[in-house]
Every structure is written in C-alpha cells, then in structure tokens.
Image (cartoon, rainbow, N blue to C red; front, side):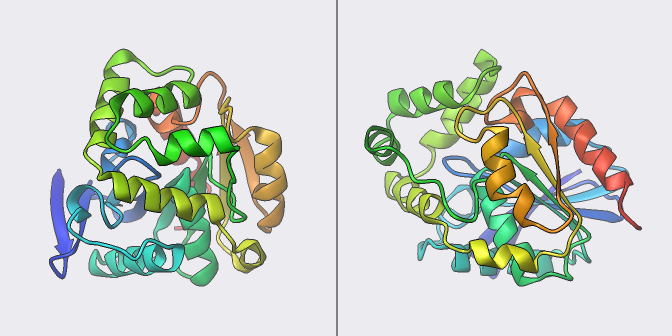
Length: 259
C-alpha cells in the first residue's frame, strides 16, 4: 500500500508497507524519493513500514523553498519521522541522502536502531574538479547534461531506468539542483561521526565517484563498529541498477538488529 502525506502543508512523504519495523529512506541529489521505487518492490512490505520523504524543493516538497543546508534538511527529516510515528527506525540514505543520514544519526544517536549508507557522500563533503563542477552546476533542466552525469555515474542502468531517472531529474528546478550540489560538495561535519551509535552498514559498489577505499577512509573507519559490504556490477545507483540485490542486503542487515 502506498500513501502520500504532507507535514504542515509543506514537506511531503510516501508511506509504503504495513510492517512494524520502520525504515526511513533518504534520497540523494538530482532525484526525489521516487528513486527508491525499484528497491521497495523487492522488500517485504508485510514486515517493514517504509517512509520515503522528498527533501525540500523536490517532488512532493517542491513548493518548499530554501534554505538548502544540512541543518535544515536534518530538521525537515526529523519532523517527517515524528509526524509519521516512526519509533527507532532504520535510517537508510543514498549518496547525498547518505551524507544527510550520517548527520541525522550523529545528532540523534539513540533515535535509530540501524544505519545503512549506500554509496554515501562523506561527511567531509566531496569537492569536484572544475570541469565536473561546471557540468554538475549547470545541469538543471538540461537533459543532455543530466544524462551525461547518469552515464558517468552508472555502470548497469537499463534504458528504461535511465529514462525514468532523467525524467525525475528534469522535474527539479535548476536553482534547486545548484543549491543541493553546494550542500553535498561542502559537507563539514566529520567530527560529528564519533557521535553515531547505531549499528552501521556501508554499501559500496563499482561507483567511479565513491570507490570502496574512499568510503573506508572517510566513512566506515570513522563510525564506531561500522562495516562495509561490496556489491559489484553496478555504479552509483545500486538501489536502481541492482535493486533486488540491494533489497537482500538491506533485509539481511535488518535481520541482525535487535527487535
């Protein structure tokens, strides 16, 4: 079952599943919560209750303007979690959403029963070379540039999934694309990672932007007790490129957590 909700006529989210184990899924840059749809199809939604918010400026939250910064995003997600009635959910984030998940888990160390980070942008941020920064910052509303970014990032994206991700990216205002880019490239809270207490799984892939060694140095090694699992054969979007396998990894991790 899918149900759309809005917090105070501003922030939108979708609820999927009726299970008692809560999961909060955070999307990344140049997309919306719709990026999780392929993964959700592979999860046991009889056991899990998933909440998928759209960050301000995109999707169901498109009418919400800035500011665009990690503190504001974290406060927004916390409001959604409370409004959705989630009790110590598993927090899952992809890419910039993984960076945001680290920020939230550090700020609320006892609020989450687990943390899953799929190719997360490090808390330190991820500065881009000048040519890449020029491409990324000017990509909003430009199908050719957005498609180029997807092609650079992914290794196993089907034509249908590429078209769907491109349509979602084109739905986001260019100024929002630029603002969110500035957030994840800057980061700036590495020292807070020591505050994370939730059991943490980092999932790496053959992502050309976030290789395993980089994730180990900037994420896994900095969160107490964290471990990393590698999923080969896909790029930056394992939740789309290898959705069924990513769902298995997530459910296997959930099974290790105390109820």
